[in-house]
Length: 108
Image (cartoon, rainbow, N blue to C red; front, side, top):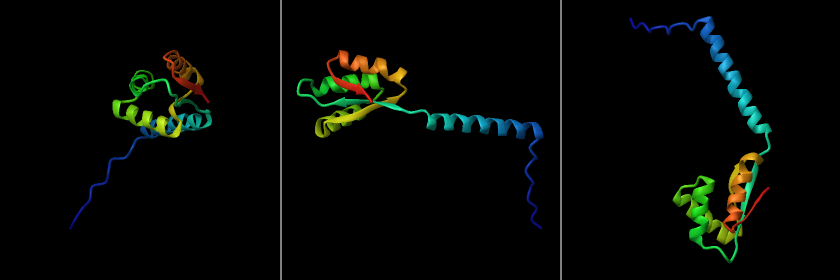
């Protein structure tokens, strides 16, 4: 005869805590979906080198070296690329830093 063990029951307090955690997670996800996201678009130019663009993407846009290289190639070949997403408050200093380096960046 094969007997299976019944899992221990979750207590009422634990169940309530789990449901409250799920509510918090759902509220956060809904808020994230409802909040419009802005983007920084970096445009190609004939002035700046690949090395400068890559260095700026690493320094200001939190990209790794390979991702920065790929992004620089996309900008070169397609004329522009989204390089960062976020709130206007988060993106403004990043966009300013990119333009201060001579890059053609704008928030959309």
